[in-house]
Length: 333
Image (cartoon, rainbow, N blue to C red; front, side):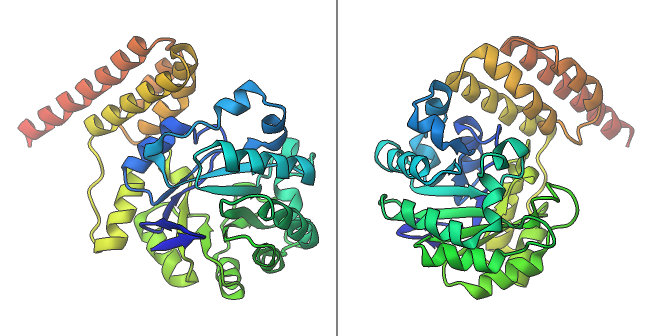
């Protein structure tokens, strides 16, 4: 069992906090597929402090998602602490996570996200300031370094531990790499060996076998899955099952994929509204259709959908086509 502070997590499979993706609708869907911990997408500290409406809506958590980690980002100590205090007292999040990994220039220009990776002393100062003011466990998600010349992952993790952080999630890429190239699992293992708090490994976990291999090769306490779960919450389920039983569960049918896609859509509509949800769901629907025969044509049509009815008719139509094709192949066979 993975334990972060006093929060007990039933298995080591963690959903990564992906910006623009990990809202409550997506998190709850993934949670129901067995994730031990789900992480909310990063939220601006200043957005919380100044009560920005869009930001405040991002703090919504369905009780069924718990345990949940809510991630904040910022470059100034005062606003970061104030935001953390608000999350601590006014949300039902279980864990407060600080983003030190976002590589996007508009974030790093504000001395936030991955910019912290250049200064272990700032990391200690910022994390200790937050820890001193909140009751919930504080964790950090970071990358291994800014670039190949500035890899301070071990010093940074040790600073987090000294500051009172309760866990570190480490993405084995530098800021310069963005999401390209290969994740360095060696540095993840070295960080795990250098601290006594839980370490969650992140990067290139694309199959249940990868998750098992990361646990075995690096000794981490948990495995964080990000892009591999997009349109594929079965990746979470199959990983949990594989780690617990050694058995690899089958891939979902097209019907199963579309049913969950529509469930996800309806949750998004309830969370936002139909117009916003359908537009936002276009990218998710394309991810759910990955590997489905005929998906290219349908993906183009998805981008023209503006209502739930349009999208559902399109998706169900594809299922009917695929099932008819499978039936005819079965008869011929």
